[in-house]
Amino acid sequence: MRLSSEQIDSLRRIVRTVAGPAARVRVFGSRLRDDAAGGDLDLLVEMAEAVDAPAELAARLSARISRSLHGRTVDVLILVPNLRRLPVHEIALAEGQLI
Image 1 (cartoon, one colour):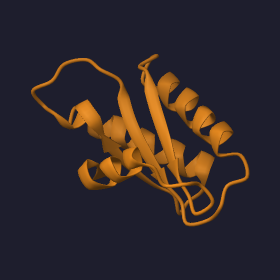
Image 2 (tube, one colour):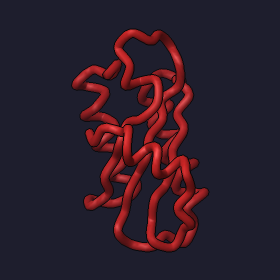
Image 3 (cartoon, helix red, strand yellow):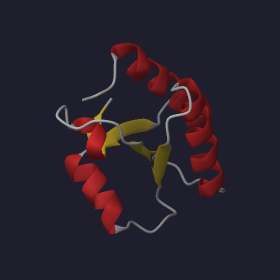
Image 4 (cartoon, helix red, strand yellow):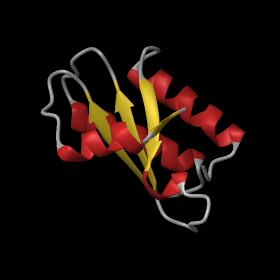
């Protein structure tokens, strides 16, 4: 995984601050490949409770995490009970790594 331990700690802290202490976060996509270079950061944030404004939550997480990574592009998927589960969620769950 092409993230430092400090970056991982920062990601966890931001996700728990914004989405709540029970939120779980997975990294998926090209950041998992040590042989790749560059690229954005793809995250799946999982929560057991419904969210009233999931798009707003994803945008807030993306912005805060991007700032912490000095402007790196961050894509955030939200997986909560009140949203339809899409194929991209299945890929993120199957291939992603919990941090």
